[in-house]
Amino acid sequence: MLAASTAGGQALATGDLRTSTTTPVEARSTLALGLPLNRGSDLLLKAGLDGAGWLGAGGPGTSKGYAAANLIIALEGGRGERCAWLRVGTGGLWDGLGAHSLLLAGLGGSMTRGPVAIELSVTETRLMPVERTVTLAPASVPIDTPGVPPPAPTTARQFVGGGVWEDVRAQLKWSGGPIEARLTGGVEIPQGGGRATRWLRTEATGWLTPQLGVVVGVGSPSLPVLEAPRLSGPFTLGFRLAFGRAARPVVARPPPKRENPSFEIRSVSGDLRLLRVRVPDASRVELTADFVDWRVVSLVPAGGGVWEAQLAIGPGSHRVSIRRDGGPWAVPPGLPAVADDFTGAAGLLRVE
Image (cartoon, rainbow, N blue to C red):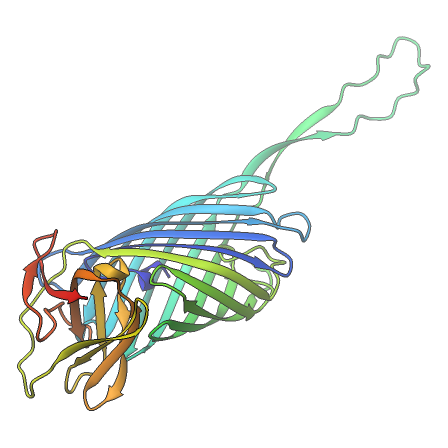
């Protein structure tokens, strides 16, 4: 679901370029923006664009692509740990039969506990048939029949390639520092009869830099309509790009200090640095900053209320914000507060 890649008050763009055992080139991209309807509200309005294209090597119908625009209304609770959403979308799909109009409608929910997130969703995909003209073979007439001209070929119109599918899926996602992993599975049920498609797929992403990751996946060769062509191979290898920035972060005062939390940074090698922040009694701590292009990064617990991550941070002055348990963004403890480009607040981090 697109909702899984969009955080409230944040713009995010991702792109994948992969290859599989039977699909030489697979490209996918998403662009999403989420904003609270009111300041401090748990009701979010999210909009986005997503699309994919495949160059197949498995026969007819394995080269295709689609593009869709989506509108999502989401309700978050429990400091962002629980979320329910309603999605509608429209677009087009292109395959060997022609260009089909595409309609999407769905609902889903998610729950997050620390680095683990679970999602459930149901989506209806409605693909309109395309009209094409076929030439029918003429009736057989002996060529030596006097006064009878050869018959002209006749044509007929056909509507092909349409259908309605119900996609029921579940996803388990784990994120820890530079490594992300997800297990996704479900069933796609065609309306009006036909065989249901069951599928299961897992993939892992290792982020080499805050923007570039390597993706390795394995799973079912048959996937839903908007995931891959039916003959896509079970093994995939690819690269992922991600760029995101908080559009207008909601910043609150830091939570009450039961102890004196601290923020520190240590050099590991070159620009690779170990960043540590002490946030007692937190079950999840996340960071966003200009040195990760405002992508949200999950910190790893190190014991004693300390959370850490190894990140590439160049010398100079940087702006950084943290949040605990999915709550509002706050100035990291121990850093002076500064205004960012979007009238929010962030901490000023100076790196030598």
